[in-house]
Amino acid sequence: GAGVSQSPSNKVTEKGKDVELRCDPISGHTALYWYRQRLGQGLEFLIYFQGNSAPDKSGLPSDRFSAERTGESVSTLTIQRTQQEDSAVYLCASSPSTGDVYEQYFGPGTRLTVT
Amino acid sequence: GQQVMQIPQYQHVQEGEDFTTYCNSSTTLSNIQWYKQRPGGHPVFLIQLVKSGEVKKQKRLTFQFGEAKKNSSLHITATQTTDVGTYFCAGPGDYKLSFGAGTTVTVRA
Image (cartoon, rainbow over all chains, first blue to last red; front, top):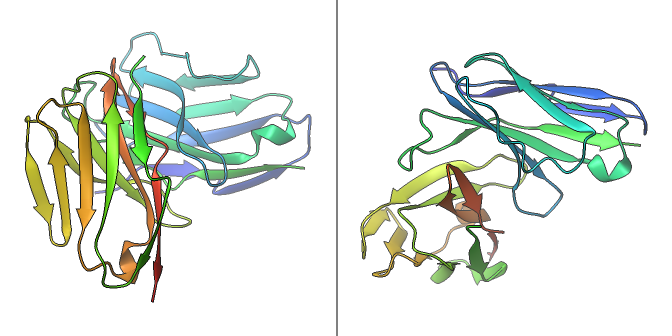
């Protein structure tokens, strides 16, 4: 079946502009995660959604970052007033469960470049 | 919170040689997962280990979970150029995975 998809694949924006990144999880996956990966670095957790529960926003680096998810479907990550340090690949992952036994399926990522 | 540490950060390997990368946790893990990220790609799930002392093999890759469930290792034999990439371990932290910083593997032909 279809995997996790993300759009756009690449985004170049000017400093100070807002951007919106989209993630389509695998159908039926209740958990959805956003990560940030700077060049040559590991995965930085941003936010987590599980069904209709309140999201875990503990990884969001500042109030310029926000994310939404409607039910168990599409999620959008919004970055307001972008800064150059926001340049990174933003990865979305979905998982069929919040339990300890299910792997995360990653999308191809959105490469964000802030000029 | 839960943290997993990986060593080494970089592994330069001669093609055909073996190497091992390690993952250590400060707390006992209920399970540990390994992912591989090819250059320019996204992380892809490799395996999950659950039981104390568990060993699983995938062709030339051998994964082991420590007896105390605080560490894990990935051993690759007869390294090939297709093994290039970054290998991440990830442990459950609350209800979300905590990823190590990864071991980036390069191969000399």
